Image (cartoon, rainbow, N blue to C red; front, side):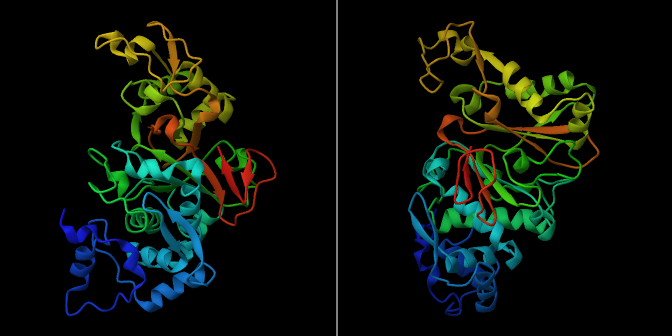
Length: 374
């Protein structure tokens, strides 16, 4: 990496129009302000429109972004949003995602610096999905939808420019992941047989929320034959029970994204969202011996798993400790029996659910200022 790419993004508050005759895109690359792709020039008019959508007051501090703990003012947020290609109507969702990720409960500081491939995943619920034109159907995880792509990209630009997580500098991920370019999607509430995720957590149907979790890229589940709940979910379990993702070795939270076709087949037999999570948690297990290679490389205790787990070689070790640690969404198009298991980062990260308007739900988990610790 060139030294110029390591330049701190604190200079984002300077006049970005003074390129001194240099091609603007090359100037952005030289300053280290990009994610490796060309960006939209943050003209004064575009930035002002984005600030207005955030409520004005450009110096208002929305959050501090680790690991450099840069100040995310509304002006800095607006500049990064414009560079990513966002429209002003995306601003409230983007702000909500960033404020949720910067909660201590989320542990963004460690996510930004780890050698793992983990990246923050944002999933949007509620009417705002349609208001800003998000895609929750075919190809929801990408590509092709401006809202999904640019909100996710703006998050990454702020993690780079404000948080300072430049690859090889503060971001020590061994290989990285395409999810570090953009990782934002919406739940397909209309084709789901169950209440939306945020309603299950105590919000009203008319509320809009953003759920964030540290996540690997989605792992495809090809399950074309079963049409009964156990058969479909056993195929999901086959994806969950490899031993090389962090949930297998360090417990924590994970996400399952069922396709509408899979979800509808399951619900047709009377199964609820809670039934699905309970089944997956109960039967998605590995033998402790498999996790520690049967002590081939020395006797291992594995302190990353809960203390109360038995550690005999034939002990069954669940992928997550509770059904509540499986965050179940319905995402994707109505044709195709393909779902996803999305591993988390073990117990090192906990997800956060935040309302776009900052209002706490009437019930559900502990919520402060509209932010819910899950």
